[in-house]
Image (cartoon, rainbow, N blue to C red; front, side, top):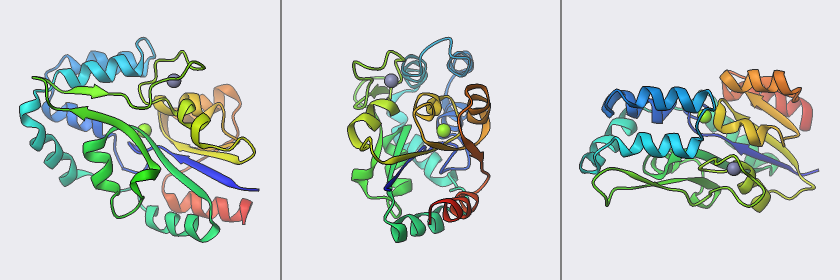
Length: 216
Ligand code: MG
Ligand code: ZN
């Protein structure tokens, strides 16, 4: 049995959600209502996140990057977890609703770029425009932005065992298709509500220990 792990980035690999941190630091107050609407699933993730980034002037691009790279901390145990993934020859991809300008630099010593799927921030207009290279395919009507089920249909072999690691609304749709979920935060509530098999985690050591017990 081959295991394929799809792992969220913001609030999962990193201690906090970086889009929220960025907006808190740089966006005018309108971002709060957009964030609340996304979390309540009143507007789509693509619409809400796209509008939030449009609140930011492109001229300050380097300030956004510097701010996040200075303050992002990885959740404890991530490197050890990746070492176990390599040792067991589990498949591992990062699927992130975050933006390339912070996801790729943060992961550069940890995950090969061809195993990272995220959105792209374009700074060529007056305000930041988000490109969505992994938008929903014909099978998804959720307007995800970065569509994790679409990515899974592309890269996950249906015979493999799909493990999802995540924390929030961006992980809802893929968690419903997983064989097992490691969950934090709002994703725990969804797993409970939908009867999805899951284990809660705080650090990646929790996941490493659990996976070694179950799959090794
Ligand atoms: Mg997240
Ligand atoms: Zn979708």
